[in-house]
Image (cartoon, rainbow, N blue to C red; front, side):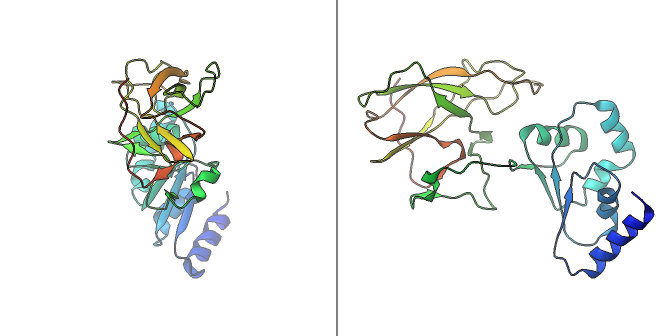
Length: 233
């Protein structure tokens, strides 16, 4: 980047009548770094990278990264890994909004709430984000089934370990057409790496037989109805 590019961007932001500035990957110099200190407009930064390199991130802080990032009104990370990197090396609070989320048709139903700008895309309870799951393919489907076998992928960092013994009480919502299940896992204590977590099998007892309902992972679904009480395992 040349000095001309920096001055051109400064002039555009000063004279362009913009309401807000999106700084893509603020840690990457040079234009983003300059905007963080030269523009008086509200700033929103998006963080995309995962890094464990203490040397390069430390050098970034010596050059003023964390101080510059304090100018950001909102910090958005595209993944938990990117949020972990930002929090560990630069401080601040990061809202995780994935790059792309497949929206199920069930979200269009009136009894479900679409995620809004004020709500996370992934459901959370007591600060723990819901983990994704799939039905165990070895279980034969039956309308009379009152226990479902799931394979759960833990959302939080767990150093590549299974989640056995750390499952919390699930949230279950059902009506005549759908059965929505949210799975929560108590995080492992201490420092955890971002190794890929294996799927952990778990059995979920239902308050009534599944019948002909569609079974849905509720991790990315926001429903307004009160979840059904968990059945005794």
